[in-house]
Amino acid sequence: MHMSPAEHLASVRARLGLSSEQVAYLLGVSPAVVVGAEAGAPPPPEIERLLAVFPATASPVADDLLDTFADPAFASVRVPPAEILAVAHAGPHVSRALVSLYHSFRRVRDENEALRVAAKGAPDGVDELDEGAHTPAAEVTAFLQKHDNHFAELEEAAERLWSTRRLEPQNLYRGLVRTLMEGHGVLVRVVPAMPDGAMRRFDPDKGRLLLSEEMPPRTRDFQLACQVGLLGQREVLDRLTADATLTTTTGRTLARILLANYFAGAVMMPFAEFLASAKAFRYDIERLGHRYRSSFEQVCHRISTLAGSPDRESGAVPFHMVRVDIAGNISKRYSGSGIRFPRFAGSCPRWNVYRAFSTPGQIHVQISEMPDGARYFTVAGTVRKHQGGYLQRASLHAIEIGCRLEHARQLVYSEGVDLDAAPVPVGVACRLCSRTDCDQRAFPALDQPLQLDPNARARSVYRPSDP
View 1: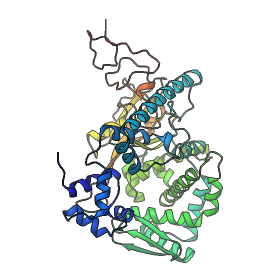
View 2: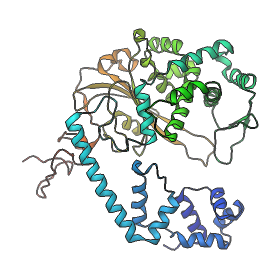
View 3: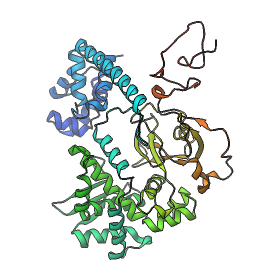
């Protein structure tokens, strides 16, 4: 299909993941020139050269090469998509060779990992197929597991903030604004949407914190508390991120951001009070959200931090938490219940968290059983983040929290549920699941030879058919 120069430019910009302003900066032209070219104006020479480098539509080899460099094994290289597409266009044969080499690497890596797990097993909370084990995100996940997702110093700091600054639950926003002004000399301003889409931007030189007007009030409170943590808890954050688990600068920076978010959650939902409310409400996420003016996701995350307290007599239920998008990518995970998560996509489609997408806005409960026989009670729901106007598409994620089945009666969600009913068989990931009777298997198991019979067909091509 023939594309006009305007359509060609829009297609290339979308595939590179760049805004009009970013394309203009890279080409050395004004943003108005790029916007005009996409609107149908004759493209200047700079844009014509860009279009000459990148074809109007991505070729299969370009898509394969993009997928290859998306593997966490290349995380430290960080090859820009523009370079990948340029290589695919200029050297398609070399690109196919690279993709073939990558597939061989993946096959050997997966087979070795399966053998390692079969020989030694995997610890609770650590995925059995340890892909990209040394990426910054993997380091941070290991860091959270090491600390049981609980940081007493930040909890104590949040409690001190409430007492020293005399914060009020009904007016937390004003109290946090006052804290930033009086304690750190930072002026807070709520501004229209920022050009780069930022929700919070702090300028240390000007002592100014900008918050987007497109954030709901509870998100503004959270971002204010996060900034208070970054400024007021520098020494604590320095000490915590010096952990030996964090071996890269990126990993330490990511951990710092997550710890600031942890502090914000502790400010919005003070530990002792929140734990008492959680027990009284039997972990009713929506009721807790109303009381503490927090979102579904914020409450779920806070619930997952309670059992890690050094006070083992607190009686908090140990929860795991996972967040996924509609494509199955896991963007947040913590295992306090002992469940095992895959590190990247390819998790079991029978997980409760994926059922939530079928009816957004509703709560789903599930009794599941892992291949090792462990049973869990899980609660899942969707969260929709809509920031901006009509033309900005909202993002949809699903959140699951869960605990061992023996704790289920402490949750309000177990009302009316037969906890003795047959559980749903759930695995970690298809390639590592040994169940042969699953009709939702997407890949053959690594530990079982694939035997295909063209004269017999089961519900899944990877499921052995009955003789």
